[in-house]
Image 1 (cartoon, rainbow, N blue to C red):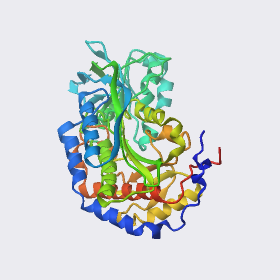
Image 2: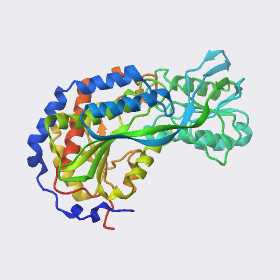
Image 3: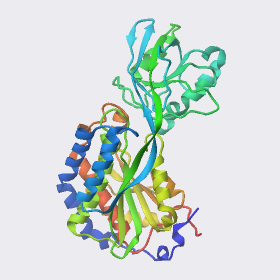
Image 4: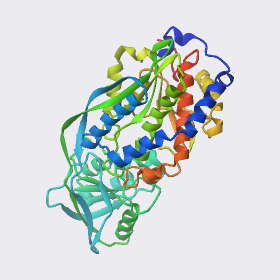
Length: 454
């Protein structure tokens, strides 16, 4: 691992009163963010005029070209598109229908990267389990040739998402014909949630789809009472050859150390449902507008602030890896990476994967953000797109919000522009602007947690 604290300027001792030093500048940025209208208008265009942006889609191509134009219009320098080859998964036509004990359409969405069914579909009996241990107890005799339904209770996103990600291969190992997964959400509103699933190459690839919580609970209750449930599943999902795409980046150059970079961004791609508003359109536009405000105010940090719209976060992560490859040996000059990928509800602060001394400095910056409620500094920063940077010692931060409704809308038709509250959006913009500016301008640098020298 490359440890950035070993660099010459990394050893400089940061100012110990960042709150006082940057109070005036922070207030200017916050005032400008709270009064801004341009960012919200940009987000409206992205959502209403371009829409959802799955990797490999024409809509994503349009979004990438438009984003580069917007960065240039905002006055950013060195705007470019870093080439990335991305997977091109096509959903196609799909449906699920319960055919016994009654005839009823199910609310479903195929899971991203799933294979399809035969053209005529699959009709099979459903076996319902609440977790992997129940599946294993059933054994191959009771699973073979059937559709496994995971009726897992939502226990928070990360504990629950494994059923979506790995459930198909776990069931295929026992001979299942397909899987249905209860949508990973706390909200039951007959809305299915899609998302990426992953196959184990050692197991057969079987079709996988999400169903609404209500449909999952209904089928599980019927099977628990001894009623035979049968479902007809039809999916034409398939993979096309990899498509040409790209990360979009632009910069506010540093006045003293332009080679040193604070990168700030989110992912430009989305799933092929809804408008990709909260996930992750609001984030990328808030990051762009945060830096656009610095340009408007004539602020010039010591180091460069780079805005990055990473591609293919949803079903491959190739954008983050391509960005790391593009950085190459310049990794030592990556001062910090800030990712926003949790929606744009009211901000609360930042998670940060840094050492204790750096966390103390971040708390000083956090005090500058108390007026917009974003002053909390906690551990565990990072994100899928900046993980390749963090592996090589770059301090990673994640902008965090209250997250009250994020997983109600996540990966659904309901992830639309109207869900983004303009006041909350502007507060996020303010938090991103202040944090990225101070990190780019303060005398010293953060140190990643665990960094002890080269």
